[in-house]
Length: 313
Image (cartoon, rainbow, N blue to C red):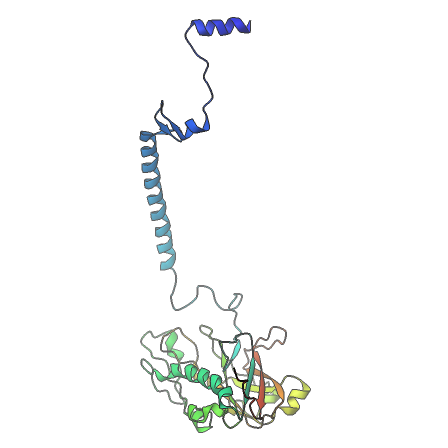
């Protein structure tokens, strides 16, 4: 029966189709196709995808433009309680050497000026931002940055570095490093709209009660362990009340000058490592040792010995 069907097919002049080889798929001379498509077919599909991706790109750009229109370049979309930014400011310190970002050690030798040179250079760069007083204003004791949130024409208060110079914590004294009385900058992270809240009545913590001033963020530095507390020595705060609260709230402006305080370690021991814990105090600043919220740690190591000469090459 099968032979009869084959004979019938041959008699009708029809040949059995042979499967196309891979070489013929790449280029079939008889059909004039490349990869299974003719030149006309390739032209049509190319035009189709060009038009398709033009419309797709236009749709994406349109959606992106609408999204960007909803953003404020000065204020994050989500901030405050319940967001990753939070409402509790972190505490930072300077000098923090960018060349060794994982280290919190401030170590120098009183008999080797090169040892404290990187810290002085870092503080010089940090304070240089305060040299630009354009688009700032002088503020008296009763002035503040309160209007920055509501008045777009208001200028931020100019931060005065004169207090640090008077306390021998300025550039001319090499920030106390030369005399073995290092001065460390303590600051708060910038949180949009944040301002300090005063303590109620008798709720001011005992460790800052003698220095606390309404409207300010009081800084208190102690040794992290009983050994460190014993050897920390005399600590001087500049200003005594801490960070002046009249420079808040923080608003994103190029000319905004961040308020800071400095801590001077007058009698830090020689040749002993001391771990320092500095906390910022206001009613709306929480402290958590495990996450280090509201506090910062760093180590001080002041050597007083002849520097070891580098071996000859």
